Length: 246
Image (cartoon, rainbow, N blue to C red; front, side, top):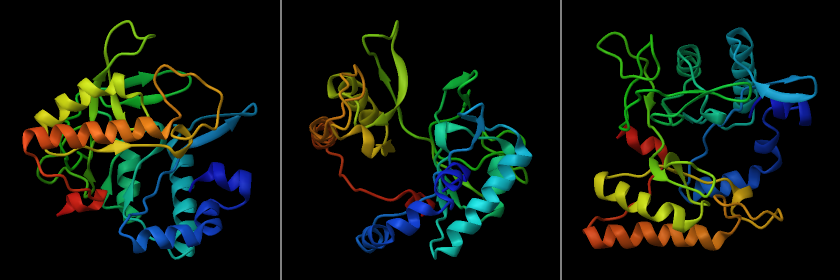
């Protein structure tokens, strides 16, 4: 739900409206619907990361209004491409968001395509500082949004010179994920994963060294998680993001 969808389909909430029956069904089954805006602008025919706050604020407000008008009112968010800032956090709070899961602890990439800066961010949930979204705020200096960082694990593909921490995407190939998944499960009591529908289905004729485009790999990763939890005697419970609020 963002300005990109508004330009393409005429309404930022296009997907909520078109697939309303699906969203209502999954909500009834216990799933949670969150807000996942991609903050882009079009430049010379190409969508690029929007970093100008005045435009971001306007886009967030307009998209949120369109979303509310459909009858859906999510309280959790994840900003596309892991982009975040002090101003965005504060605006999300003003719009009623109570929990965010955008953080990728330790990941930094700032170039012409991406603006990601989570340098020094802790792996555990925290209430961000008003002056630096990457860190927990002190008393009187925190934003009232619980930031729940995505789980990051060690991975290494054929094209990596050295191992790299990536978020847990269940569509990644199991032989690349397995060791990192098991290590994370040993050292943590929760795991926040992410999966895009487009990367678990054979929609493209791509033999990618990291992304599988194969639902069988998703099953392997889930089985790895279950097996390691069973081995360690850890009980498994699937939860929604807002359940972190207690």
